[in-house]
Image (tube, rainbow, N blue to C red):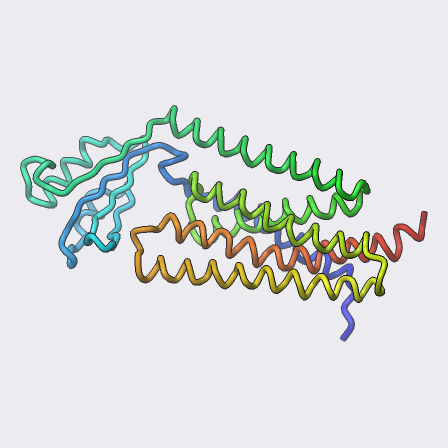
Length: 281
């Protein structure tokens, strides 16, 4: 069955729009890096039952985190939660008079600092896109292929953010860095494809796209495999390093989206540009 390449071109774009719709409805989970709050970690016994603690702290995230050092109870509370009442519940739960009797750490991030993290993160993403767009246009100097590369990178980021909303991956300074890395990964394969199609003179259009596809898919699958291994190792061997798992998960979602956007959307736009747009001028 022959499927019109124009149909294939728009499928990833529809997925990107659905991702944005999901984010607008479901929202994004925020880490205390960007929303502010308090994170408390207490070294505890391996079989600690958290059900009572969760009941008494309904507005906080309470979980067990395993590491090579031991088992930690981790409590994350937002800015609207009274930290003193959280500390009182912790003392009662562990039956101690003072928190110094526990192996206890506390990290607090205020609203000003978290707001600064968020502002700087958004600026970094914005500047990355602007400079990426300038470089791409400087390389190809034609609006349609350059626009296709930028569209693919923006849609890839939309799919990654949609995946974060779907799977409850928090937006944090670490996941913002992962989104920035994704811009680089996405543009990498798109520039390679566009260069092969526009600047190579050997072979037919199909042969140039096919050659680029073999190289690009090999590159992407290698990185996807590496990120999948990182995610599994962190999840099952060192779950305390959940920041690394979040970075790997964002890159995995984005790289899978990038496969579709590069080889369906960007390749489709380039095919249209070479076979219809240029001939119509």
